[in-house]
Length: 409
Image (cartoon, rainbow, N blue to C red):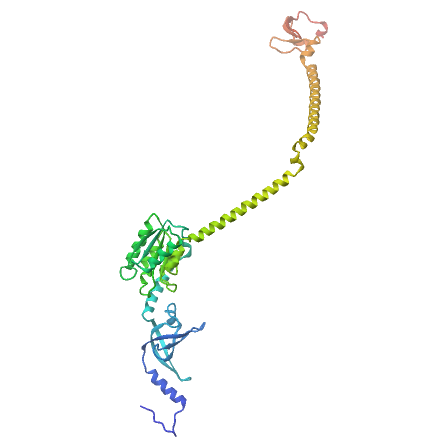
């Protein structure tokens, strides 16, 4: 029921604001489509504040939601994104302002695709397919370049034309396939596998011109991403233009911004390489010339030395010294030999003097019994016992026939 008021019985502002709030509170949730023009996420705040605008008219409204609601789409929703929200109108009585409290946010159209792509990107990242350490360097000069591209496409012409301009002898192994539509993924995957198995292909380029997100979806397909990750041959992604970033760019060993850029990356420029060869040759000549000059100067200095001017001078000066040293060595060796000879003679004389044979030559004899025992005392010999007498010049037999009186004691 409308509130009855008169100029004399006017309602205060707070009452009008309260009545509006009561009416708004009776409204239910609605789905609203619009464009985000401003996002305010204060650190630590539980609520995210957004500005929601009608993209066709100059009409905006405040939109709020709890942080988990916005975080669910934060990876794909930015300022300027079109979204659909399920929200309930709210009236802030103290400030007299209307806003929408969102309980669900969905990207519109392409945004839904981006959500799926972002989910797939996180899954493949977790598998390690985008890791930098698994990417391989491209060969300096490939024997043959594998090219996967659309039939009679501008991308094919750009790659081949620019590659041949840089290196006229370049060779291609081309596979023309569908690059969009229902058959694109299977044909691109088959072409990549075929070129990866080719023995002469050293690098594979997957090229396509620009297009919408929907057109480039085949190059973000999980099957293609895993196929490229399993390739033994380095793969270059040249899809679309600079802003286009399909998932193939992330798994490829090299991402080229355009097909033309891919041609510049896979082969060197023959003019630049010839210039490098010329510069290297000039540096080598300069280095060799400097080395020869340095060595020639050193040789001149060496030849200027007095020893090299008269090389026999040093030998002649040392001749007398060598002769003196030889004489000194001979005298020393002679003295040592004489001294050793004298010592040997004295030692021999002492040995001879101490020898039992020398004692025998002085007239002594050694008496031995039949068993070989040496006789040292008369009482050791029995009467008529036969003994062997050994003298200096030989030996003979003796017999004891009598005993002396002094032996009888």
